[in-house]
Length: 354
Image 1 (cartoon, rainbow, N blue to C red):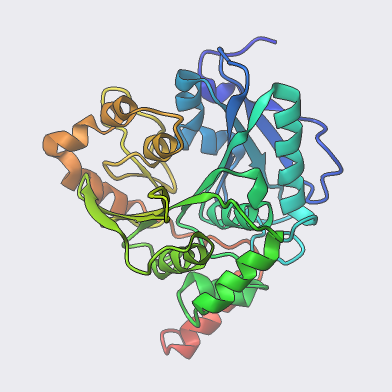
Image 2: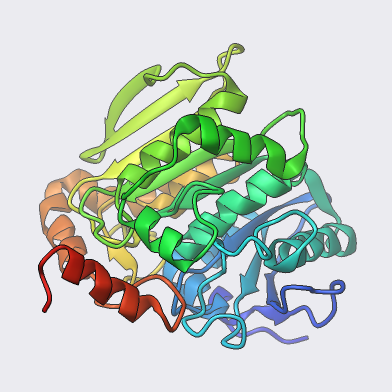
């Protein structure tokens, strides 16, 4: 098998990985040099995106090539969702043993077995609908993942149809912490240990409101038995970073609130050795979510973060934050033909549309 020079061009489709009840595609990136029991990252794209596009924009394959871990990119199909959103809000696709969640679990199991992956070092991340699906995977298959990162995503079990999904995205009628924690505990019938959770959200996200990030923290704080208030708050390249620790002093939940950023994945591409590429939903923000998430999982080093964020340290963050605000997409991140009617109905109720 011959590969092109760019890691983003080196995705290989896995033709058969199981019964695939969710009818998804699976693409795999393997680094040039693999050790035994290599770690695996599962990266879930957002609406309107593809596996290859997400690999290019997020930089996960670039970092994997440098640090020697594998990346699995599940891919949605138009036949499942017109906007290529993972169906995180459909009970039949976000339940253990069914639909898209079952397909992704089958992909993971196949790659772990066929590529000699360390089953104790499997992680999942995603953007928007992919972030919500990453949360669904950690909830329904918690034994499969050591950690997960939810970027501009939503809490698990907060919606069961399109109308509820749109309301949740807009921060209306939010579910209680009790309901969300119950949904999490019921999803996987799991007693622990639980995945660590990293939550990233832009302060100016109008597609999935930042309130959803707070609800994700509330949801996972129950199983991790953390305090309501963070144990530590710091500033990372001008952005607020909160951390929660368990009884053993291990960081189990963290949030990054990206100042001024709209809906998307935070990038830092002005440094000397950056990961990813700006584009729709891939926003220059002076902070690298990819490098920092990988570092929190032990897959990258401080030098990886420093290299890609060097320009931000030199004081160019304000310009980059402005760019992040300007890159808002007019397309709603919800895949259903009825979404336009729902939005218009909501605007009429608010008196904004006649």
